[in-house]
Amino acid sequence: MNRSDTSFPVTLAAAAADALLAARRRQEVRARVSPDLNVSQVDVELGDAAAIFPGGTAVAWPDLEEIAGDENGCYTCADGQVEKIQIFSGETQRVYTLYPTSGAPTMLISGIPMHRIKDTDPHQDTLAKIRAAGPLAGRVLDTCTGLGYTALAAAEKGAQVTTVELDPAVHAIIRRNPWSHRLFATPAITPLLGDVEEVITTFADASFDAIIHDPPMFSLAGELYSLAFYRELLRVLRRGGRLFHYIGNPESKSGATVTRGVVRRLTEAGFRRVQERAQAFGVVAVK
Image (tube, rainbow, N blue to C red; front, side):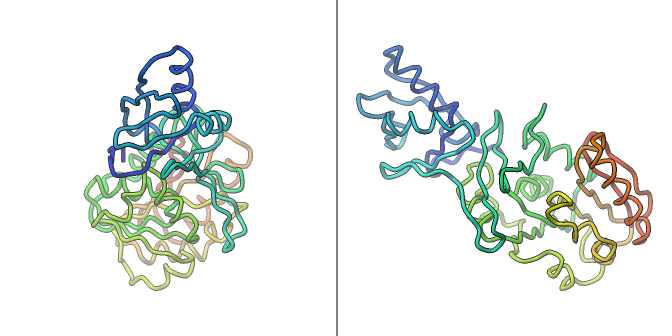
């Protein structure tokens, strides 16, 4: 998940732009920054008109001022242009924005971050989910692709991953994210587009050895917390297979309420050993 790709466009956020501007003010001739949102570090030449990255990409100083002034945005820099990584989806009527952190970026869905970013970062958040899911091998269903971090991490563990995303706009964000664009070039990952509530009905019984269910918050996708959907999860999971269901902060009032409902409905659906995993903000269960 944290590999550099020199063919990927220079992608910057405020921290890198600030560092370049500060080095220029100190009249330095080069500075070391990340060209890919903290995946790697490179030495950048500080020219009169622009900062020049390895490979020849030049980012003009006024453009760097613009990037530095937006602490909530990530920008693709190519062909003398900078473009914020943000898309309005006609499919869901939501705005998706790639949002920088001190590690891997997260994505804002109409202003709401889809990963934990307080006292952690999206990469560490993903690793906590993978640990809670237990040893991953064989066939794994990732019900909600998001930025693809979970699917990539599971594939790196040796799993064959099927991952489902509702919105084509999210796939477009993934392709522009240095941390997740490899999703579409990883042979062990099959990315599908569609409503997982419908797509799951096309899978055969016992199709998967493990499931990672990381839906949007309850208020955005209540159907993915329903008894009917949990019964579908049970159906496509092999006997003895393990489910990890991300929910949210169990210590918050809303998180505690949702967690109680999830535990009750998973049990009613037929899952066994339904247990909270507070450190991963979710629950695990076994078929």
